[in-house]
Structures are given as structure tokens and as C-alpha cells.
Image (cartoon, rainbow, N blue to C red; front, top):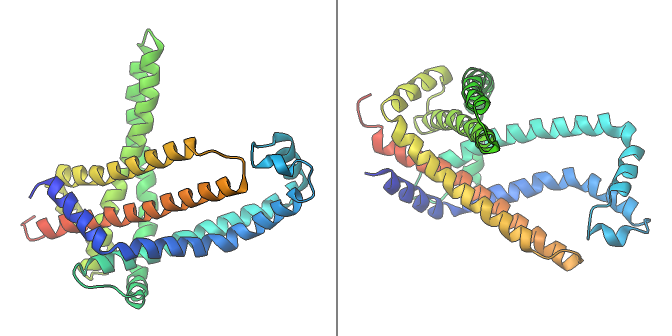
Length: 292
């Protein structure tokens, strides 16, 4: 079975489990509303008494923004604390949701109720949380060891350049290498998550070692499949940015239209997240019976 066939199978699994993306989108909305509401009412209170309120939708007023930020500068530590707290809660929520996603995808033909989704999230939460904590130093070590080498090689090429084009290419290549390295680590931990859930195993380090051996002989096939799923996400993002760029702005109705388009993109990102796991599960099912 080719990599492209596995990708198509992953697309089919994502389509059958499309309710997962809608659930993730709804949960993200419910999570964002209480966080955004205080900032919205704060800005609305300032704008409603401002003579420049009518022009804020048309362009960003730097003078107003400076005055607004300086007025609430003393509250910045409190806001920063709230942001840090929100990020921590969101990361824990993401760990919980990953268990629900993989558990649902592990039942490819059966429908998954909301109760089953939350049950899977709770059932696998602690093992996936331990894996998340393990992944933090792993990301730092991997990037700390590999990215400086790549950057040094690109800087060596840049020093020998006689025009600005090699410098531009080196800067883009540096960013691309960072994205690819992050994707490589993310792919590995995705397969560990899948092993912990589909194999109903709770020993994180043992599963990480098992996954390393599983991917060792199949790295390029797994990496190619991951890049195909990543390419779908890139195409989605470029489409969103292009449409957002040409959307007219300046009236409340058009702002609402832009908001709806933005939410369509958020929903698309949830489909993309499910697609990554779906293609990786299809890959695991294809090759898990082979001898390592």
C-alpha cells in the first residue's frame, strides 16, 4: 500500500469521523469566550466614548492603542498571569482531547457519542499527560542539538554569498528547517500517543522505545505521510490568508463576514488535526503486524 493510498484512507476516516472536528471547534469556542469577553467589554467601554470609534474598524489607530495600553499598564502583570493560566489550562485540555480523538479514530466503523468521546479523554488523560511532560525536554534537547547545526551550515553558505539572494534563501531555509524539525518530533510523539491508546498501554517510556523501533525501519514512509497531511494544512492556510486579504473591510457586516471566514478556518484546522491522527493510525494498522 502506497503512502498516498494511506493518506486517502486517512481522509476517508476523517470524513467518517467529521463530528470530531465539530466537537473540537465547539470546545475551542466555549474555551475562548470567557477569556475574550473581559477584553471585549474593556475595549468596548473605551471605544463607545471615543470620537474615533467609527474609524477603528477601518484602520488601526496607533495613537488610541498607545493611550489605551498606557492607561492599563499597571494591570499588565495581572493580565499576563491570566494569559499564562489560560495557556496552561488549554494545554491540559489539549491532552484530554487527544485521548478522545485517538479513542474515537480507533473505532473506525462505529459512531462515537459525546459521552464516549469524553470517556476516552478521561481514560487516557494521565498517560498522555505524562507523555506531554516528557515531550517538553525532548523538544528542547532535539532542537538544541539539531537546529544549531543546521543554522551553522546555512550561515556558512551565507558568508560565501556575493549577492543578497543566498541570504534570503538561507533565511527561508532556516525557518523551514525549524518547522521540519518541530514536525519530526511532533510526529514521533503522535505515534507514541497512538500506541498508548490503541494498545491500551500505560508505560510511557516503554511505549516511546517501542515507537522508536517501529519508526526506525519505516521512517521515510511515515515522514512522507506526515508531510502530505502537513501539505493539506498549508494549502488550507494559504487559501484562508488569500481570501482574508481580499475581503473588503470597514462596516460591521463585513467584519462579521470576516469573523465567519475566520471561524471556518478554525474548523478547518480541527479537521486537519483529526487528519494527522487518522493518517498515522492508518499507517500503524498497516505496519504494526510486521516484525520490527
